[in-house]
Image (tube, rainbow over all chains, first blue to last red; front, side):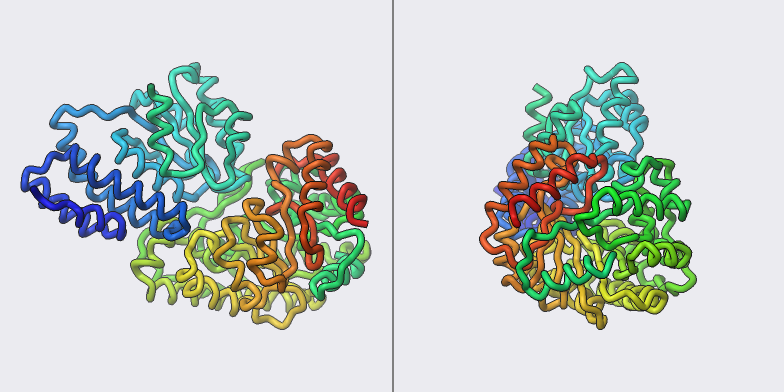
Length: 210
Length: 344
């Protein structure tokens, strides 16, 4: 059986080239893509998350690890689709209007993909109506909003309001996160969930999906 | 800032224990315009409105210090605009700068801007120049040169994720980039001082410093902060309300003597981490308590904050960050009154 610990290590080290190369070799050798994700990539990102919690890793290390995992996932994704493996759910993610920071969004995106979700990434500075349009177009059931500034947090409420005005608020679960965001704020604006870390995002998304 | 307020700051920095403890708030376009009854764009574009809003805050809260005092700014656009970043302004939203550099390699094309002529910087100076006679007639002086810090500017020009990753993958290039930015910052702060000789302080805001680990801070943060804070001024004020445990032990070495940080750290912890050498400004939870709480909750939380202090020297009580949007008058008044009552 092929030793896939180098893939785990490549993600841990934030080495996207190595992660991609090892994944390519593994797939060519017939390793099950689902196993690659669930037994190697996701545990690697979990360990990255733990290192962050212990102040061993910081944001640059997290971002590089997420990028390495995404590079590996890009090879695996078409095989999962071809194999008829459905994503657990579809998530539209973005940093809210007025906010150009993408750290949280990028980290959560990687965790959600690793966790089996299909992620539609709208980027940064996303106005409320774009979130609504993306949900309608992609039939997504989860929306993940990121903000890094207290001054842009009101855009989270504006986005929730946009879903109400569009008449589809009840059809989606809206999750929020970001450095200045708190559970209290999530409760205040009627979000369906709040995560204080990217590592917990996939678990939260699974929770609201069930 | 009045002379009395300035002397209060200097006294606290010297280690004098004042009774009651002083209070101060960083105020700028996220809070002041709406509080004063204006849209953010009206505030930023109309010198009269800008000046009157500051005057209103000063007259409403005469017992607290507003930092930096009559702050001429365009939000997060100010310094990136000088490099050519597009600034985005809406009627009543906090302005921001759009990413300028599409790739890591394009960083090599960045040239040092001229703070006298480039971007919004001349407008920053002009607004203050126009207001200076009235500012001084009202008993205040312009005391601070202000700028966003080098990592903050780099992140706006390059994209936050791209910049932070490049610190690990392209260190040499990032040093060249940060050198250009810091060369500019040193000039920009010096130009502000030249325009307003009453300036005897520097305020630098850089939350990106809180996102990196110790090795990266020592390599990419500290040397550039040292250069910026090497200026010959009495007050060297740093704001970072992202996690600050990593940078805290190094702030005195950077020359900083006043630090505003986020509410995720306690004043006691920050005092320990900074070796007691730096005056701390903080740290009531800005949004959940100061902005959204009732005046009674503000009072209760402020009493807790005061009672938890192990050492009241080199402490100025404030929010853990700048004044948050939407903070009502009664909450600010409750905070100031409570500090006065419980620390006299």
